[in-house]
Amino acid sequence: MRGAGAIAALVLLQACAAPHALLLPGEDGHPTGALVVLEENGKEQVLDQPLRSARMARQHVSVRTVGKVKPAYGRLMATLPPPANSYTLYFVEGTTTMLPASRAVLDQIRADVASRPGAEVQVTGHTDTVGSDDDNDRLSVQRATQIMGVLIAEGFPREALSAVGRGEREPAVDTGDNVANAQNRRVEVIVR
Image 1 (tube, rainbow, N blue to C red):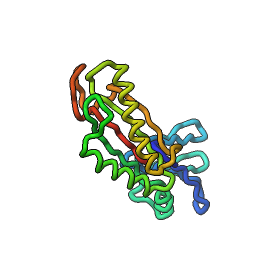
Image 2: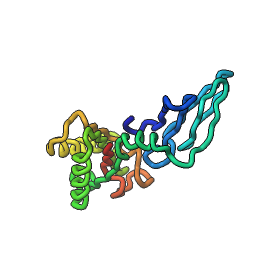
Image 3: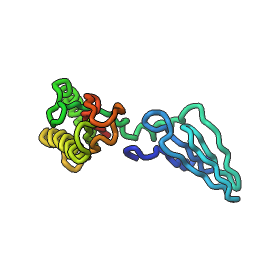
Image 4: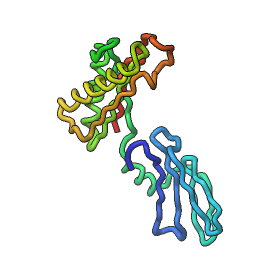
């Protein structure tokens, strides 16, 4: 299981007398989804907290929270990819020129991608609220595409990378219209 999807695992253990389900924690330790178990009578048991467990018997489902992960589940969790990492690069106002401090972050991204077999990289460009919506949409895409190009030039496969622009729609810092804000002029890179 990869990405931001739910890390819910339905584990059927052959050694158990009855099927058993366990909702595993997400990357941040919190649930990123839920698992619904249906009893024969149609009643639903919802597992929506990490380490909630359901054991299915003939006509009944018993739900409880487990204190720790059994070794078998620990081995399953060990096969999951490492948690995603997020990086932020900042830009000079109205340009695709990265601020000098962001160059070190770009090196961290390269190292992270290189350390993950089959890494996936999402590059999202953003702007502050100075300028028109159309201009900011275009600039945010240019910023994201530029960073994606740098990673491709470093030898990372194009098919593992994607770039989008969000313009001024998702500011890091809420501001009014036509407000220059250095924290909003950014590219966010998520490496999975």
